[in-house]
Image 1 (tube, rainbow, N blue to C red):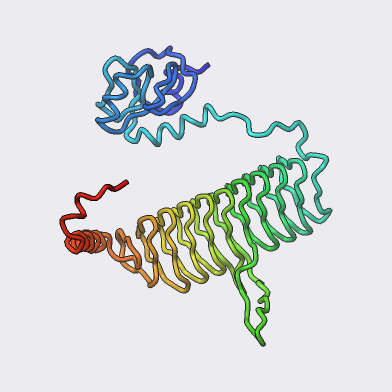
Image 2: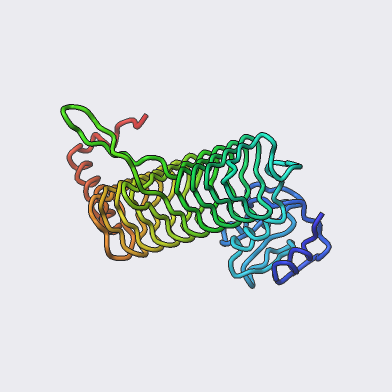
Length: 335
């Protein structure tokens, strides 16, 4: 079992308290578990921490919890994320480097120290970079390229000609390079348009479970370096994101839209096609983007507009609807 002092040394934290205190794991303040390490970022949580059974906390400098052992870091939640790596458990144990049930084309290229799980399929001309881990049921199709140290969880799919950079993570069921939604209607029939492009995921991209990123029609769909994509997100063909974007659950981005750097789209944001979203823009949940947004800031609503404008409009709308309903509305049973 690791001690608080060992944690402080490894992550260069300032320790106040018993260095020999054993730490069995991590928890949140409201979990209130003895023997664990938690973290505090606000005064409200500090009061909960002081009354808890948790013996030790990561805190900001000078914000120690009375009666508790503390380690200090300017960003406690970041420090906890790093400490959590000490407590990660095995995901799937396998004695062979390549499971005998895997189907690997003889023209595929495997780098050093790759791990290939059961029932993985790797196609003709595919390249798997050194240190990659492909868990059970992963499919990497012809000529797809994975950079070094990628991890693909069960049933992730990388279709033909797609390219993953280094340290890319695909959560279970992620689909990279499926056909874009392209049809031309001729004589009353919807005729499929072949999707001839690919998908490029740059270094340090993570794609959530059951998220789908469609291949481009003629060229590429591209996700910029360090972008993190949540579960159940959909990127249409030829979408391009900048670096360091955050796309939260159930976001949908229509084809050929381009996002700048550090764009955040909260849950269930919908984006129309062929738009430009500038750098450093955040859009609140369930908003709809129907035209390009070019200026940094916070946006909300349907259609999306600067958040302060949306808040004022919403407040006015509810005030007017209350006036129209009359005084009897206040007496109505909401149930």
